[in-house]
Image (tube, rainbow, N blue to C red; front, side, top):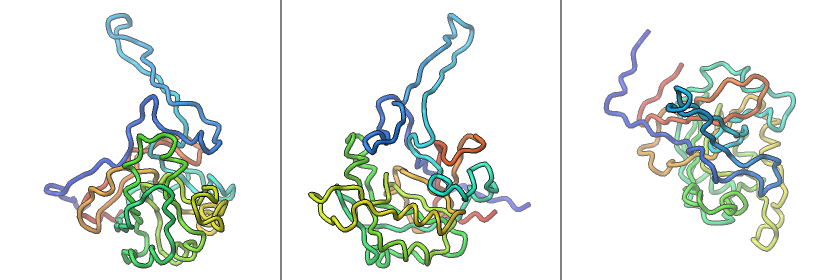
Length: 241
């Protein structure tokens, strides 16, 4: 088996740290509990250190299958492990501000020329707002419903982004009332039941160059649609497995 020499290539950690007090999807009505990280054993008292965690499948940066919104789609444990290691291309959209709506024209202008089986890494820079809770979730950038046609034309196997939501969830006071409540992600998952989503990532704006390899690592929990992920990006190297 050939060996890939990664010396000289930067490896970036694109995943958010999981810690108490961090953002979550409760502002959108998702019934999750706040993150907890508790030390339950101490070396001096118990002879070892150990922590327990209260997290959910959408904690921090996560990997998600279309099963999240499509019961006919596979759960994460049914994917070939090769799907978690993908050559990737970078799409750099104009920097996001609160309530930015990206249109199909924005995607066409930034189109990276995706090839069959590649991951799309969509960069908006929104992770800069990560500490602004709850705005990070409720005021984040979104995609216009018309962008669905662009996605369906792409040969992507994985979509990675620093956005917290895809659909426009704002009220009319922030503009674009015709987009409010659209189901872009649900429609995409119904059309592409084998699609994997990595979101919301951080440090995407630090990626140099236009290609690389993205690797998503997470716990194997059978029957689930999403788990927290450690997401790595190797700059300038296309690894196909």
